[in-house]
Structure formats: C-alpha cells, structure tokens
Length: 175
Image (cartoon, rainbow, N blue to C red; front, top):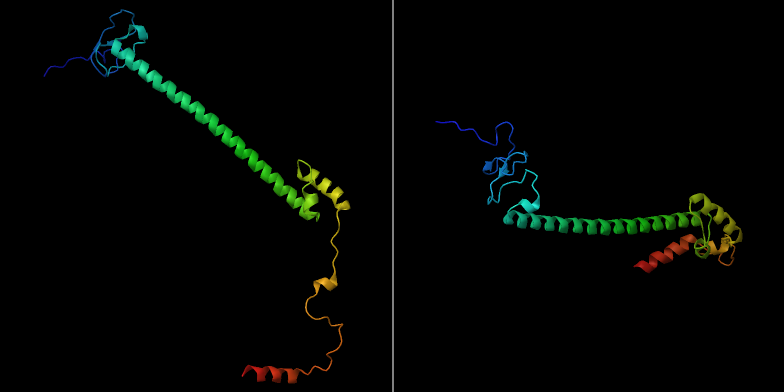
C-alpha cells in the first residue's frame, strides 16, 4: 500500500477538500485553485467573477439573484411587521387610555356625557379634570320612597289581618 500525499493537506497550500485541487495557475500566491469544470468546487482563492469559468459565473449570478430576492423579501416583511407592531401598540395605548378615563369617571360619579369629555394624559390630569367636571355634574340623590318595594307600612287599612285565618284559607285552596 502506497501512501500519497494530498496537495490540499500539505503545508503552504490551501484547499477545501471538495474536488481535485491544483496549484494556483495564475501564480498569485493565494493557494490552490479548483479545476475548471467541477461544479462542486468551492472558490476559496478569492478570484474575481470575470476570471471564473462560464458555468461558475452563471451559478454565481443565480445565487446572487436569489440572495437579493431573499433580502428584498426580508426588508418587506420587516417593514410590514414594524407597521403591524406600531398599529397594535397604538390600539393598545388607546384602549388603556379609554379604560383609565372610564375608571376615573366612575370614581367621581360622572355621567357618560361628561365622562366622554375627560381630558388628560395621565391619571393625575384625568382626576383633576374629573374633579372640575364633578362640580357641574348632577348628583344622584337617594329617594327612599322609590327604593322601597312592596307595601308601604304607613298605609293603613288592613289592621285586622289574622295570620291563622289566612293560613287556613291558603291550605283550603291547595286541595
């Protein structure tokens, strides 16, 4: 068995190990260059695209075109995502302001018409404005007569109610 040295693994020469490698034909001192015609060879020598064979130039142009397409798609998606995030953030902030305004309006017992007029950026400003509006808001008064249900104990007229007789009448009506 004979041992042969691989030119890609010898010191002083650079290679990728993916195809036949020969010394740099241009003599630029950049290391080994892949043989022409091998589509799997990697261009690690730093050659210019004009110096590459036709098949390599076509493949390089195709890959660059695909990369440009992906970069364009990426930028479009980034812009689309940024606009969606911005819109969602604005909607969330608006909803938070509405909730805060409703909470302050309920705390100061403002009617809905006046609650819609509350202005301010923070809770403190909204509370100050709510205090001012509360001075002019109609205050709900408690009407005890309207809050009671059923019979009014002040009404007279059925003082002779006999609970035993009422129970007997109810039992007689059941059967």
